[in-house]
Length: 167
Length: 167
DNA sequence: CTGCAACTGAGACTGAGTCGCAATCGCATG
DNA sequence: CATGCGATTGCGACTCAGTCTCAGTTGCAG
Image (tube, rainbow over all chains, first blue to last red; front, side, top):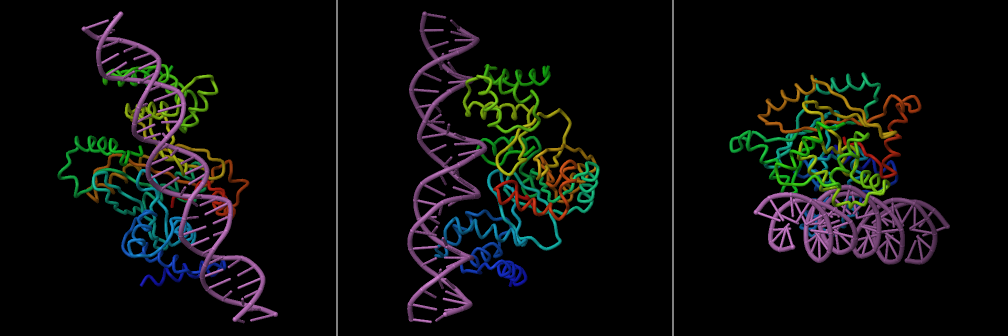
C-alpha cells in the first residue's frame, strides 16, 4: 500500500544520498495511514503512543523532506501552526474549514483556478503557489446553528483562542 | 483625516464602556498612517522610534479591538505571524505576494467571489470568511528572475527560513 | 474626594518550530 | 574486522510571535 508515494520518497532520498531510516518510515506511515490533515505534534504523540521512540526534531525534519519531495503539502489550516496532507500528483484542491467542528472539506473548482491565472496575468505576476480557504459552518453543523448564531460562534471560538476569521 | 474610521472606532469603544486612550489613538494613527499591511512589532518599533512609550501587550490588545470593531483586518500574509490592514467597508480583496521582494498586491475578482459562493452552496457550507492568496514573482522582480530561477528562488527563501510555498 | 472599573507596562509564560551538538548509525573500503 | 565518514538522531536550549498576570495608574461617575 502507498507504494507509489513510498517509491517517490525513496527515490527522492536516494537521489540526494539520504537514507530511508526507520524513523522516516514511521513518519511516512503515520502520515499516510489515515488522517488527511495532520499536525506535526499529532504524529509525535501517535508514534510515541505506539512505543516508538522519536524526537520532535526528527518529525519536523522528516516532514520537511516529505514536503520537498512533493508528495506532502504543508498548509495553514488552523490559526496556529501548519498541517500536513498527502498530495496527489496533478490534483490540486482548496479547503472549507468548519468553525464549529473543525472539519476540513476539500474542494476543487477549475473555474476559480483559471480566473486566478487571469488575475496573475493582469498584474504581470508569475504564480508559484496559492492557498485558498473559506471558513464557516459545515452542513452537519448548520442545522443547530442559525445564521445569527454563526457570528456568535465565531466570537466564541475567538474567546477560547480558537480559530479566528482570517478575513 | 480618517475621521470615518476613527468615529467607528470611538463608537465601538463607547458602546462597550471602553476608553479612547492616547495609546489606542497612537496605534490607530500608526496603522492608518501609510502602510497597508503592518505587523504588530512594526507598530511597536515605529511608535517607540517616535519617542512614544508603549508596550507590546498594549499594541496587541489595541489591534484586537480594531479588528473586532471591523475597521481592520488580520491576515496571514507572511509565513509567520499576522499582518493588519485597514478594511474599507463592503470592499473585499485578496493578495498576491511576491516571494522575491515581499511586495503585496491587492486584487479583487468578483467572478472568483461568486464561484466561491457556488462551491459553498454545493457543499451546504455557510461561509463566514475566506482567505485567498497567491505567491510568486511580481512584475518588477520578473525581469531579473527566469522561470527556472523562480523555483530556485523559492528554495533559497526556504533555506533562509523565509517564506515557504503554502501549497 | 472616593471608588471602581478600565488601562497600562513589565516581564513571565506558552507553544510551534528550529538549531547546535555530541553520540550513533550504516555502509564502503582497506 | 577495523577505520573512516557523512548521514542521522535525540536532547535540550533557543527563538519568536503572541498571550497572560499582576501590580500600579488613570480617569470618570457619583
